[in-house]
Amino acid sequence: MNYKWHWEIFFQQVPSGETTYFGWLMLGLKWTVTLSLTAWVIALIVGSLVGVLRTVPNKWLSGLATAYVEVFRNIPLLVQLFIWYFVLPELLPKSWGDGFKQMNPLAQQYITALICLGLFTAARVAEQVRAGIGSLARGQKNAGLAVGLTLPQTYRYVLLPMAYRIIVPPLTSEFLNIFKNSAVATTIGFIELSRQAQQLVDFTAQPYESFIAVTLLYLLINVIIMLIMRWVEGRTRIPGFIGSK
Amino acid sequence: MYDFDWSSIPGALPILWGGLKTTLEITGTAIVVGIAWGTVLALMRLSSIKVLSYFAASYVNLFRSIPLVMVILWFYLIVPQLIQAAFGTASGDIRMRSALTAFALFESAYYAEIMRAGIQSVSRGQVSAASALGLTYGQSMWLIILPQAFRNMVPLLLTQAIILFQDTSLVYVIGLADFFGSAYKVGDRDGRIVELLLFAGLVYFAVCYGTSWLVKRLQKRIAV
Image (cartoon, rainbow over the protein chains, first blue to last red):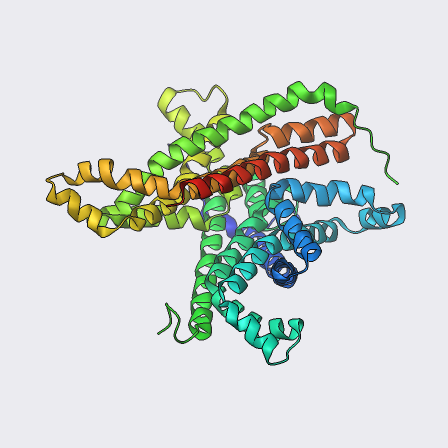
């Protein structure tokens, strides 16, 4: 192997001259983080709703929530992304579909990836929320109802506050996953980190530097999230449970 | 409203079947290599030899921190150069070989974690009983611990296989025509992307949903 290393490549200007290749990397990092965090918000909201619905006594509602989880878990993320990107605009009323296609490409890619990743991760979050609620003693729900709370109030004030604290560790791994899964958005041309890795290879012909830099950035994201979540886990531990101090 | 036209699918079935075979080949290879190498990694990680456990821990953590897309791209960069270095020429189906290598090594990290949990799920008394009978470390692992660990973990190993089956669609990033890639190509060729993508989604759903239903039943049967 006689590969010539050129780490200084990152300080060179890109062809359009507006930034350096390092700037491209940072742009990719910015979009990876933005996409993952915003999609996580959707995942938490939709996932909590679906997860709660799976545990309610109403058969129709819990069946609907189960169907949601099964559909989103059994189709590959890439296929889902392409369906959102290529299929949905065709099926929408014509004016909406055309309106979407006329948006600037970056906005189109971001919105598609956001919805796709958010709803995909929501199915996983829903499973954790359901498991969290299921792990609580039956008496908790009955006690809530017995003191005169309605079912929604029981969820709001008794079950969910406990369930969320129990499921912080598995949610941490889903949170890490959403950053990794955001790389799939490269397939529709969204300029997140792994797209920038490929762009750098195309423009600089220095594949190893580009890939190493991007890989290190992913590792950095991972380490930062683990540190944050370790702190969160410490703060939310429930006294008296296994794993608490 | 969109006019559906499913007529290009019947004629495309041979192409789609060819793609599915690629998908299954990658999935199958990654399962076999992944479980074998993953078990070795799990044993290394649990070993008292520091160098080995450190190596296994780094291997597993590294692969589990990087997006699969990047892993596939990495191997598509490295494997052809290794083949060239070893055989002088980089001929043959480089994409397929890169994908096979990437998935086998990537999945090993995940299988290693499952097998580690499986080995740890076997009670300590079993190890003591094995050494009391005079079995060596290797014998007690091979004859006593691993069979039980494997049995305990069958549902998880299968669930991971379903995830892997879905993940193989990502070979799209190196332009390899697996089931999804073939469906996309046919859709692109015939101007019928909508139908082909929905069809692909339906097939993935049927396979994965059916398999996970079987896994659930199996889990009930083998539950101790």
